[in-house]
Amino acid sequence: MKNCCRLNEISWDAFAAMDVMAKAPYLSQDGREYHVLVAQQFTRARLEALGTLATRIRRIAKEEDGMTFLRGLLNNHRAMLYFSQPSSRTFLSFCAACQILGMEIGEVRDTATSSEFKGESQEDSVRTFSSYFDLIIMRSQIGGLAERMAWLLSNTERPVPIINAGSGKDQHPTQALLDIYTLQRSFERRGSIDGKTIVFVGDLARGRTVRSLAWLLTNYRDMTLLFVAPKELQIGPDILAMLDAARVKYELMGDFRKAIPMGDAIYMTRIQDEWDSDAGESRRIDTSQYNFTVDHLRHLKPEAVIMHPFPRRQEIAVGVDDDPRAVYWRQMRNGMWVRTALIASIFGKDTLINDQKPWST
Ligand code: NCD
Image 1: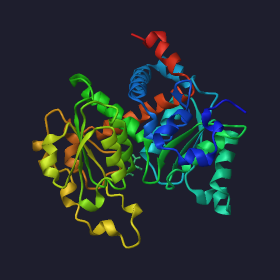
Image 2 (image 1 turned 180 degrees about the vertical axis):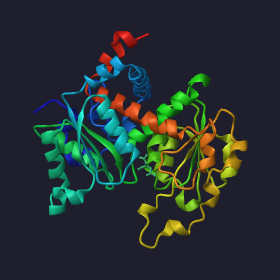
Image 3 (image 1 turned 45 degrees about the horizontal axis):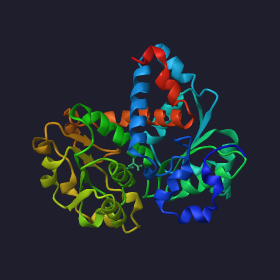
């Protein structure tokens, strides 16, 4: 069996029953992520290393010979993008990241066009992908599916890394990585992420980006997290228990206007009504006060940033886009760089990038 990570040392039942923190050591190889499944597997040191690598790649990519160098790094590898849930940014930024590193890509974006339509199991589909590709990047509405597939592949003759690009309502670890990279970049002139107040707004009950980012923020000191939402859409008790255990300060709030001047970052989210039942329960909730308007800019700290994982609807008025504190377009592009860094690191190319002479000053 090919060497992958320690997932082939444990039964699925034992792994599935583990606390999420205990799972982390099974997902890495040689001190780097192999499978990327949950936010909990990233330490602060890894977040810093990935941020530094992303910045380095960003600079190298500005030069023509730099791009040639990057494209040569993984041009003997192929990546499969298996997205059974809609996506624009995550899908395209992963495509771009693979292209930057010279990888060819394959895709299934609609299982009505694959053999799943004929009744093939997801297990057999993913095992099929691993026969042709060296990396599987997957998004699914089924929470925990990426984890199951990672275990499955790790116990075959052809293990390949799995990156979770969004699973159910639960986890979106690479979105959290790009959010952290955006915060690192936004605050670098004022120190670091430590000591900042992050305001989360919108559908916090079903937004997987908020859940993964809240976890990553426990890696920083003296943080304050403010969760601002109508009570039906407030953050889940499991996240609050995790923050309690990590001794992170937080407050649940209903009044968005009151929270705005307190934030160093305002993280807006959309109402995730695709999770509603046919009755459309979230459409009956009044969310009108949870929109960031041009008028709100006056109340925002001069150095604060406004973020959003996108897509947006009306949560941020288009008129806000021109304010220098609106960083969501940059945040989106950061996703391409940090995903490039992550893939390069999974395949052990990080040292080569960091050591590359012409761009090392
Ligand atoms: C998010 C997602 O799909 O979880 N988008 C993204 O990946 N950038 C959030 C959303 O769809 O609202």
